[in-house]
Length: 283
Image (cartoon, rainbow, N blue to C red; front, side, top):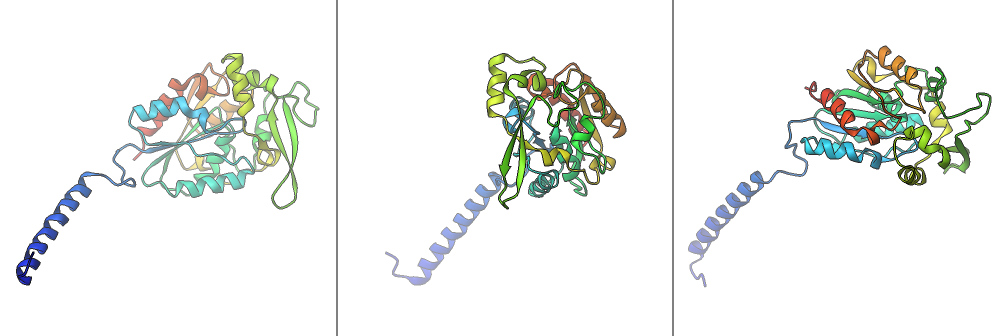
């Protein structure tokens, strides 16, 4: 077709330039999957024991509707140091400012994972543990009365919990802790959801090891990162007095709500509002 080689090269060169220009224009018009198209910070939601990432679903929908990038990674629930290291590595994959939100035991995880991460601009605790160095979730829970986890303070295992011995990958033994199905609606939800909804959540709950709840915390991120705290006044898992103590100690911006332990499930609008208040300060 092209017998004149210089002419053919000229035509092909022109076509190549046109194609390159077209591809460049197209590429610049379509943002990469790794490009931050939103000016808002990424919200990372961290669940605790006896729940999973799906427990954040109502909050996720609201935050996404308001334009926030949101992610809710799974928490291994095996050990505090291990869970925190896992989350810390995950946070390194996120570019730009982060609002880190923890529920229940997830609060202890974010307290450790955010330390020395300059991208974490705010910590948000939802009825969560905010331990100081050397404290554990178990010791903080026992610091004040009011928990429904046990009706026998002398029992070796709280009466609302099923303790299941497990063999770990290295051959050692550990104890997995589950909330008993007949106690789940009271302890986790303060009877705010229907029996059928509570039964489904109890059936799909993820256990936490006794080691994780008893492991001492490291250097707390709330000493250097601004924090927000939702105190659930009707919490039957962590006493509300313990939550207020931790919020005050951290000098957190505090909201007190007549909500159960799983406030993100029963009061997602209020939880979302608190997260967005924290996000508004991120720079």
